[in-house]
Amino acid sequence: MQRIDENPESPIIPAIREVPRTGVIFVMNEAKEAGYEADDPAWTNFGQGQPEAGQMPGAPKRVESVTVNLADHEYSPVPGLWELREAVADYYNDTFRRGMPSKYSAENVAISGGGRAGLTRVAASLGQVHLGHFLPDYTAYEELLGLFRNFVPIPILLDPDRGYDFSLDQLEREILGRGLGALLLSNPCNPTGKLIHGEALRGWVSTARRVDCTLILDEFYSHYVYTGDENGFKEATAAAYVEDVDTDPVVIINGLTKNWRYPGWRVSWTLGPKRVINSLASAGSFLDGGASRPLQRAAIPLLNREHVQAEIAAVQKRFRAKRSMMLSRLTAMGIHIDRPPEGTFYVWGDVSPLPPGIDDGMSFFREALQNQCICVPGEFFDVNPGQRRLGRRSRFKSHVRFSFGPPQETLEAGLDRLEAMIKSYS
Image 1 (cartoon, one colour):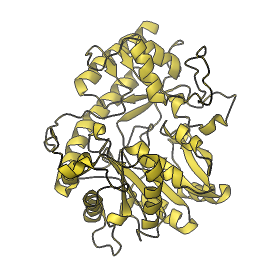
Image 2: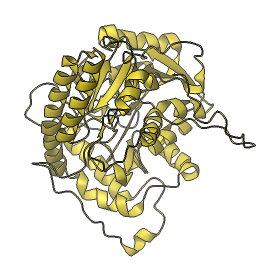
Image 3: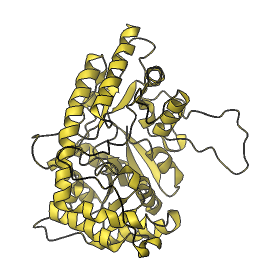
Image 4: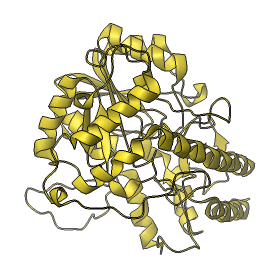
C-alpha cells in the first residue's frame, strides 16, 4: 500500500515522525470530512470494523452496568486479574480440550487492553527472526510489523485466482525456504473471510510443531463461522489442536471486541505456553501497564460456557442472514466476489468489472462517500511494513472490503444507494 500524505503542507516538528493512519482510520477521517456522523441514519458504514453491539434474539442479556469494587481502583496486574485468566483457561479447556491430558491454566493466559495491545506485546517479545505474514491481511499489521526492529517481516502473497487457498505443502515450503521463525495471520481472515478450520487447522498446528515455527493466530472473528450445518455450536480455534500447551509453538489472541460484541471494553487475552506469557507480561509492563481492572472483573461471567454458546448461536444466525443478503446484492450489482466469506463479517469484493470511474477501490470509495456510504479500499490490506515494497501498484487496487457489521435495515438502505450509484455510471 502506498501511504497517503494527508498533511503535505503542515510544518515539520523536530524529532516527531508522521505516523500514518491505519486504513479504517483514514477512511473514517475522510467520511467525517464528507459529513458523516455516527448517529445519522442517512449513512451506512460498510467500513465498520465492529459488529452491532445491541441485544439480539436468543443472545444473553447485554451488560448495561459495571460494579466497581474498592480494590478495582488500584492498578491491575500486568498479566491480568488471576480470576479472569482462570476463566479464559477454563473456557478453552471445557470447550475444546476435554479428554486431553494437557490443559491450559491461568499461567497460560495474559490479559491486555484490546487486540492491538495484545498484538503489540507479542511483536515486542519476538526475537531476531523472519516473521511471515500474508497478503492481504488486517490493515493494522502494517505499522505494527514495521515498528519493532528485532524481526524481519516477510510477505507471503495469497492468490485471488485460487480463492486465497494455502496448502500445507506450501506452508512447509514457505517456512523452511524462507527460514521463518514465526507466522502471523488472522483466522478467519480480515478482509477475505477465508477460514482455516477442522483438519486443515490441525495440519497447520502440526506443521508448526514439527518445523519449530511459532504460529501467532489472531482469532478475533472465530465466532463468525458460516461453514457446514446452520445449526449447532461452532467456533474455529487452534486451541483444539494443540497437543502440549507449554511446548507447542502456538499463540492465540482473542477477546471481547468482536466475538462477544463488546468493542468498547478493550479487554483481550493471549493464550500460549507459560514462557511466552511471561515474556508478554514483561513487554506489557513498559508498553501499556495492563487492562482496565473493573472491566476485567466484569468480563469473568461472560466466559461461562453456556453464555458463550448462546451468544455464538445468536450471532451466527443473525450474521449468516446478513452475509447471504450482502453476497446476493453485491453480486447483482456487478461486483465480483473472489471467495464468499467462510468467517468474519466482511465481503471482499473486486470492483474492476464496474464502469470506469468506480472500477478501482479508491475511486469507488470516494464516490460511495458522495452517496452516504463508507467502505474500505483494498489497497489498505496490502500490508507493507516500513514501505519496503516501493514504486508499484497494489495487487488489491481493485478490491473493496464491505462490512456487514451494522444492523440489517442499515445495510439494506446503503445497498440501495450503492446500487443506484452504480446504475448512474452505466
